[in-house]
Length: 630
Image (cartoon, rainbow, N blue to C red):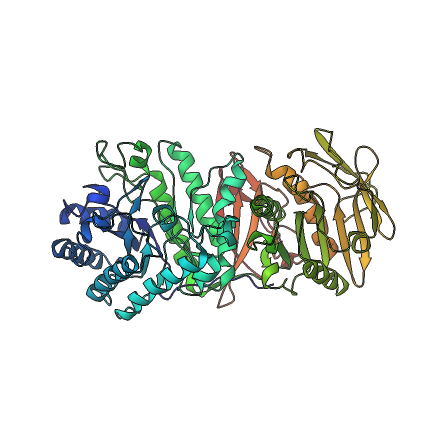
């Protein structure tokens, strides 16, 4: 299965969102060319090649038909400062939201930003004027229409938002721009988050040149935290556009410097392996502006910088420097992600507003899929995502459908066809997170899985044990008969439930602690359909500090059953392994550790028959990039 790895032309963007320490969002009022050049020098010396910059809207457009000429000339000097360092920048037009506060031009007077035709025209005019002034400058890397418009303009129907976005992009193109353009909305649409804010990632990708996630998730599990941005990039990369991680970072008020460095390292490498090909951290510098909004009321926003307020590099900047060196070594422009045999199925309900369904069904899918992604990474399966709404891809050997309440009826039929053709299809049951039409929305549960379900109408079959134990009654790959796996139970009054079944044509592979069938497989043509009656991934997804947890062992066993090819793997689940392939045939193994202590691991490759070539040392939360030799 091919995993997308699209790139923008030229060097990969690696940089920082930029406000000068002289004023933050008000920097253009007190613009200091010397300090700007010093700030850019520090970034450049650490391997950064791009900034994302902002036309603070109330200052740059003080009247509905006037752009402030003085600030435009200051921005022109800002571009020259970039060119002097061999750097580029991505200007952002409609900057009414920033760091915890919204600012309006005085003349807006509450007009709707999407549906008021005069207001849309003013925005388009502003973008066109500034584009016409600066397009073609060697320091312009691309364009962004807004900064987090869903926060500033609010949510709206998707047709309104998409029409507004189309007019804004057309204004930039009408001004002669040939540089890449995107929206700057954060990629928070329903296709990624399960929450419909009107900013459809699918629709906007059709208008733009790249997708730009903004990721600041806070979790209750460290491994999920480390993979949070990566999973978002996987979801955002489904629509045929390069993925630029447009905003990410952490305030020194929220995290110690060494832990911030670990977080940056994990985010950068995991998102690279998830298909991101650009990274812009938030942000270049700390500020000493405690009396200025938004920092007066959001003081933690003072300390998101790659440097301190006096320009001293923080450990996170050194992580960016080291990552820049890795990108150069890889020659990222010539690299692709290795193909994968494992597909993680994204149910259509994540992005589909089906009649008489609940919003919780969509957000539930996000949480469950993300945990399954973490488990698959622990098993070194390097899963690709396949969206049911686009047709489940047919080129994988193992299909994972984790803790699924619902697919469409054609989706279930498609999975059975794939099994019949030789694939292994794994489904774990879930009743869903709420009480409305609670239960499995499967098109033919009994026939598909070779069981007779024993559900009682209107009631759940609660999981009463705090720890669910599955004991193998037959061998499954490396899992031997008699092996026991233990899972911490969790969920709501609705979702903490199992599926009682009696086998008909299926073989019981494992039983639970009460002797009931728990894991079953049915031969289907040349392949297998495997059912787990417990929502393992959902239980883990709602359990704090749970990873690594033993679902990865089931995935590992299923991979062997399916004949999944893993070009590199590591037996320790605290280390994930994946491969990038350069155009000249060179292959790079990327090992990412999830332990807070030093680890000694021996990578196993397909070429050496499973024998480790050498022992590798990984520091705490460490990363190693190795060239694989035949």
